[in-house]
Every structure is written in C-alpha cells, then in structure tokens.
Length: 170
Length: 184
Ligand code: SF4
Image 1 (cartoon, rainbow over the protein chains, first blue to last red):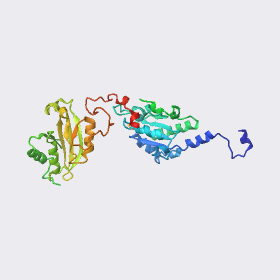
Image 2: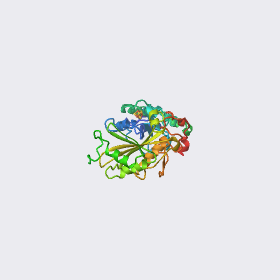
Image 3: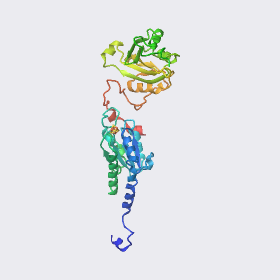
Image 4: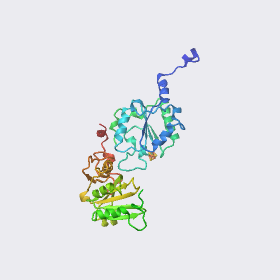
C-alpha cells in the first residue's frame, strides 16, 4: 500500500494472479453438455429472463477447446460417458465442472443398467447442483460459487487430482 | 376417404381389412381382435412378411406407413403364452394408412428356439433402425437385414436389457464397462 500513497488516485497496486483471476471469473466460457431435461433449465438460465450474461458467462462454446466451464446437465449413459470424458480432456486448463441436477450427480431416479451413477466417478466435479431439475437460480448460484472460488485463488479440482484423472474408475 | 369400403368402427360387422386378410391367408392368421377401436392382427411368424406386404401394396387397404416395430417379452404372462404355443416374444408392427387414415397393429409370436423374423426393410426402408432396436433390446434377429447390429447399447454389450429376466440394474456393466478403451 505504501506505493499507492505516493502515486495518483487512479493507480492501484495488486498481484498479477489477482488481476488474472478477476478477469477469469468474470468471463467464464461454458461448455454445455445437455443430455436431458436439465438442459432446458440451463437454456432458460442463458436466455433473457435469467440472463447468465450478467455474470459474464453467456458466451456458450460448443467447442471444448474454447471453454473453461463444463456444465453437465442431464443423464449420462454408459455409451455417452467416454464422449463426455473426451470433451473434458480437450478443455484447456484451468477448467471447472458443474454437475447439474440429480441425474448427473448420482443417477437420479434412473438406477438402471445403462446409467452412470454420478459423473464424479470419472470427472473432477467442482460444484454439484441438487434438484430435478434445479431452477435457473440454482445454476446461477453454482456459477457464482465458482466465481468466488476463482477469486479466492482456489484451484479447480481437476488440477489438484493430477493430469491422469483418467485412472479414476468407477 | 373411403369410409364405406374400409370402415374400421362398423357396428358388429368385422372390419374390411380383417375380411381381406382372412381370405388371403387363412392359416397365417392366428387371431383378429378389435378393442377400444383399435385393430390387432396376430399372424404366424412364417407369413407375417407376406401379410405386411399385402397390407402395404393392396390398393384399397394401402397401409403404406410403418409407424413402429417393437417387441414384447411375454415370459411372465401365462395366458398369452398358452394361447400362442409358448412363444416367448411377440414382434409388433404398427401400421398407418395415409390413404384411409386407418391404423393396424400386426403381431407375430416368436419362439425362443427360433428367434428370428424376416426383415421388412425391403418394404419400408425405415424399418432398418427399428429392427436394430428390437435386436438390441430383445435379441430377436431379422433375416436379411442389411446392417443388424446394436443401435442404443455399446457394441460389445452383453445381454438384452428389455427381456424380463434381465435385472434392472444390469449385470455389473456399470462397474466393468471399459471407458478407457472406448475413449481411445
Ligand atoms: S435431474 Fe431431473 S430434470 Fe435433470 S436430467 Fe435428471 S430427470 Fe431430468
């Protein structure tokens, strides 16, 4: 702070990390992975009424290489899980994962032969949203919590569990 | 519309389509029924293809649209089993006629020991995926099908999930499925 006392009012000092995190949290680029009804609520969140752009996260990318927030919203089947894993692997770090709704988080009511009982068996999930489906407010809340994590300098789970998270099996 | 010729809800008298099919395929027809204004026809496995072909190509009936192909596992329904000589499955075809607006359900009992029916892809190309789904879910094969492999489940999946003896939670596929190899 000493430096600021000696400079003009329009100059602040900070750390590079803080500036980068500030930019990062206000421009999350979501990669939507909507496979079921939860995706409808995700779309509502992005549309004008709930307007996720107020939180800087409206630029939806359907290319994993241009996004840093994976929103898994819906049921993931046995056959779909490798696809989801591949998409997650293609996202550049740092990257965050939101598991939206009961199905993505634990299989929901679909305790059946073909449904993954929670994507966290294969992906490092940063934020779970309960509900069937969760309301748009819940998704906004999850995004805001991720923003808070970024702001505090916390690393996403994916980075902590080392590059070889692929070895985690169900 | 040709209501006089093809009246399916006529009071008392048998629908025209039943009359026509019966006179063409006496022994091939096992049962005809009309319930809730819906017509069902149970055909012998060996004649079901010819019957479908007739229903499609007959100028008056003209059941030109194949709505769905599916199957039912009757292994736990004793009354149906005894009625059709202990055939475990029924392959079900739903037909619709754009010309008359009539619908018809055609069923064919299939025994477990000869688990196959002739494909109808030569009549309706759209049957290809529907029959693949029946194969995927019940293990019923379709003779001369152009590309009979699983459609919903992974290619190396074992078992047929919609059979009544298949457990709801599977046989451990969720735990043993090889995600890495599929990913490669
Ligand atoms: S949690 Fe509910 S709303 Fe969401 S995908 Fe599952 S069934 Fe649909």
